[in-house]
Image (cartoon, rainbow, N blue to C red; front, side, top):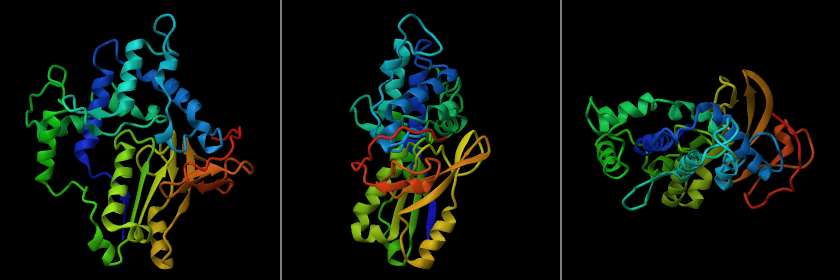
Length: 318
């Protein structure tokens, strides 16, 4: 039995963080003040919140959200409630995800729309210390490296990072878990759609590679991925907005009953207080509001395939 938030692809995790920081600090004009992140998130959520049939401040499946920050471009000079043209370009670069400048091949998937207020640790005046030390000491092996004059190269430096990672048994990226499942192992993965540190699509990509490696029949019995709308990084109750759920209890019930979980209920917290419950569905299904019932309660939602969207219902729920 195994459970966890998938965090094994360190090269792409840190590449994404550098991509975000360098896009937002290309020059003074491109820099987006942290104070503008809530405004950006509100606009993104407003554009896609109703995709799950309910306006509750969460985008159920941000991978399908096509919000373009161009709608926020200032009409007359820089203002607190809009973005300048260079800032719009920088934000579009972030949403596009890291790419190799020589081949244009994807290096890391992008951060999702609707989680912008979580970007503070990787979008502030200085890079995230963890990603900084990773490149300084592990990839470049240069304690004197100055990222302001010699930025990360998304061709040569990423290749070097991949070589370094291949030498250590810490990259959890092998999708062939047939020996594990053959022994009766069960793998429960979860990730947050609003995670700023681990690009959410990395978890989706890994899950899909596992399914391809072990086969659909084995995967249906032995592997589950849950993508949690609004979840920042790890389940818990701290912070202004977070979700709590017991993955070990889910895994234990799976073991005891023999039935793979297709959904669970998460409790949503805001400022440390429980405010609602949320249905979380096994990927690729999405929790869709039924159109009736208390929008703050998980039993008012049903797990459905992404294309099976309910009619939009306006409601307010934290």
